Length: 72
Image (cartoon, rainbow, N blue to C red; front, side):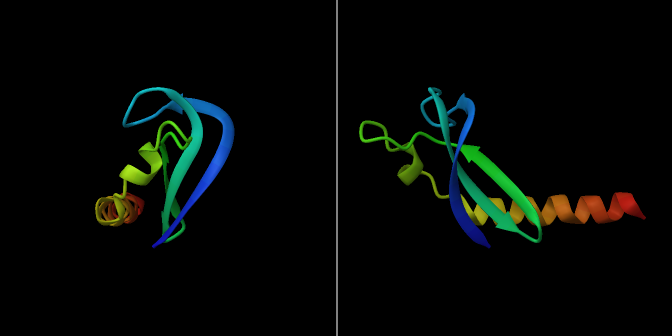
């Protein structure tokens, strides 16, 4: 699993503090991405507080399995 980040002009509510942010943490596996909006400023460090690698891995595996089953 690759973990990265991206800044975007698309602003969504942070999943931790609910303030609008353009910073996203990206979890990528098997050509699928999970993009989570998280604040990443000097005042708000929600980005550093969240690491859902294990949850994201399971989530992406389940989605991939469902997609493959639906394609049959």
